[in-house]
View: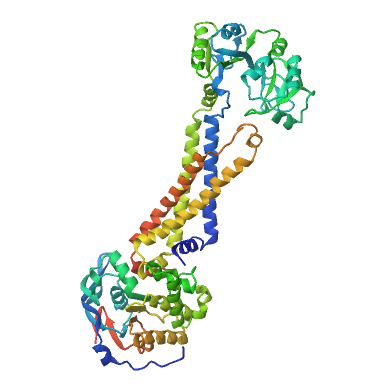
Length: 240
Length: 381
């Protein structure tokens, strides 16, 4: 990946694309002992297919909570979250697991690769839940790793890769099931500037060329600049 | 990659811990099998083909009490008695042994093979023994242990009776379950004891297994209300009376086995909990990727089960291999002549290992089932 500058987003064009995420009056309240902490307060938001949305805000503003609810790994206290035609907040745990496997790719700040598996095996993990034959799984893994520029690192263990390479493997794992949504929680938080730029370029390319909807939580305005839209959360509420 | 290789890689990710876990199960199950075999050997002594025909007759008061030699005629005429011989335990000390090296018995040598027919001895040696009342025959294990040879003399120093025996070895027998004993003429015992007119007990061979119970009844009845009441019983019952002298050995060994297994459950559960706790974050990632609760539980169960069964195979299989290939008679100083690991014991050990694997996985499986993805992601590596 070259050191490319972020390109200006075609916002108007994207807003004509179909809605993929519709959030209405979403609230999340945590109970911490006797104290109730409001992480999200009546958040409403629409995200269009192919958008690269940067969720920004200070620590504790609720951006990760919002991302987790959209990705189906957390539940709101009230409100609804619809992804395409699926009311995610109504799915039971088993249905959510299937839905996540088919529709969501995860990229985390700390990569979260399984240390005893090679890059290819890590990327293959989500495919083990599908009925695809082993040969087809291997083809998809190879394609995903090629897409992130790590075709020659398939047999390396995570500890044999740099941080940037690990994050690219994580992106390949997020891509391999061809999900509609890619959610990224501070994907550049643990990377040097060059690796961060490489990762952001990959995510931008996925959004622009492959039509993937990317929702990214970040503190970093430089990372947010790669997105097609940025929104700010503060004290659990969206700020204009 | 498939699920099996994923589980295997996880189980072996910390090789030292996996090896120690397997070894702890293996050592415990080795001990478990050993205790089971020991209990079986003690409570169910091995039988040979003549066991069902042999009847032991001893004093009703105590095995240490003598019986009058005149009982012979009365026993011999009971219908169903094929052969009867006096039988007295001498309990002498040989060389520096403390009397535990091998047992010595006085009996009628002409009846010996008729009752203890499993003993194999060359005819010329047997004839030589019959011909010399001061001679004896010894088991091949004793001959090997002490380097004794035919024609050699051996002195047994009396520890129970006030007499010493000077015996010439006429032959060496083999083929019994315990080829260690020394057999000599009861007439020689009578002679050194100055015609004492007593015997330790009687051994009888019944004409058939069917008549044995009636023969036992009639022998007991024949001496009832006499000054020397007897207890006639099958060889098995006689052996079991020795077992009862050990106290409730079965309960003791069962208790030890239970403690071994219980401790093992605690150790294994702790190890599995530790292994899973270290991977909480990874398991949360798997959940996020779409793995359901039941699949994660299956991973944990398979890992725990695999480690336990590996330990079970090593421990119980090792015990079977070891005890099948070593001479436990020599190894245990003659306490356990036949130390056999039965298929039932192997089955019980593998079942124990399997149960152990399942039980050890319960606590970590429950904590993983309760864990939300978000909580798991917050877990530090």
